[in-house]
Length: 603
Image 1 (cartoon, rainbow, N blue to C red):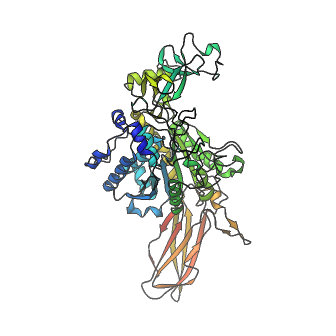
Image 2 (cartoon, helix red, strand yellow):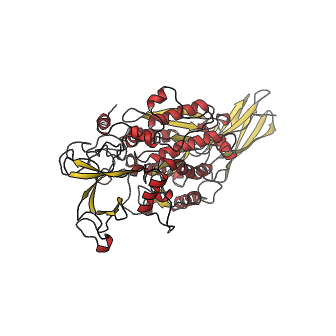
């Protein structure tokens, strides 16, 4: 188990008491140890809170205790620092195991500061559980589908960002970002001890920022950049100009401040499909799946072939990324692109937010993303919602001009939120820069994530589209078996299998790709097609095979009509060895679930 410099960070930045005051963390671990619960007897949770990895684990355990017939809780690995990587499986066991139902994989928090992703995953879990039994839609979903929910993809980094206000991309694994032979030696610091890492402003007649004349707390960036290049009209008369730096000191004496913080690897550039080393993709890590958290994700998804869709929660911006991602758009199958564009329409309809392609340039694109690996290697369509549109989502447009301006943000924070998300500028004697002022917005909760007071609203907005996506999964349907007596104790057994779901059993055109043999058979396809199995009691098989490999089956949607066939009919001839004798037909599909007939008597 590898340890990051977390103990040093704790000494340097102090404890999370400020989070308690802000209402961002519900309750400390010491209180949990004394028996304080986070889930009410009715399944209720305080959703306008951000939870640590330990509190999230507590919520998962309490949900499992409250809803044992709907949940399974298990760890799929350990993080770099030894925290468990928890997944909660959600499905109604009364209708069969989750492994026999089409499923969604939903996670959040791969990027440390993107805390809303974890909360959306946790909120979705809570809504599924508390609505089962009285909400017809959710009841039907859990009886016919399954969810694998991983709220804390990256528990180490998430805790560091939440508890100590550090800004790191993903894992806490040390990484030498400034290439000086030392790793993580110059992180941002809370110099004034207020619990927040904000900014330092230094008077400078050629600075890139000025203090707004109507409220000098508000810093406005000057167009034109460094060196006084701003046009005169860009800077109001008598406005004070400043340099603006992140709070901290030059720990390694290289003349730069905060240039080598904690970590440096971006775990959503660490997946094996179209991975590239760091000279082309910063943050890629030393090799694909070098991190235990990404390895666990791939191993889990690969080991659960019933997963039909992936929602990989991020922030911010208020939109969702669709495929293609880590590849040139010209390489992407146009039939699958049309399907993906269709699936994205309800996102805009339910949230009012846009859908954007992750890659738009033939070479200037990301490398090694989760949704790229899931599509090309598993045939699964994945999505990257960027939650939290920014202050325009919660700040009042006081002048009703259709825009949220910086003065309106400050007014709203003052009047509606008690000023909690801005630290007043305070004089500080900096060891290198002399007198500076420290203060500014708490950006982690004023843009990257919403203020805690608006967190539940943001989570709630995501739920309709998440539930829509799982409903598009393929679903096997079985007709029969019909039994026809042929005389002399012989019977013809006939079964017809179809797909009642919107998507084909391959999910995508990519899912149907494999090695084509000289006879036209597809070997080793990305997604295995369905198969039928014949069960016998008191009878023996005379013609046919117990397992019949089928081809892919089309879905009910208008897309990918050339993938598969509408239905498959299979016949067997069996002989009864006595009376009574029975047959049963079972259909199995990696993506469309399992369907079984009743045992039918041969007579």
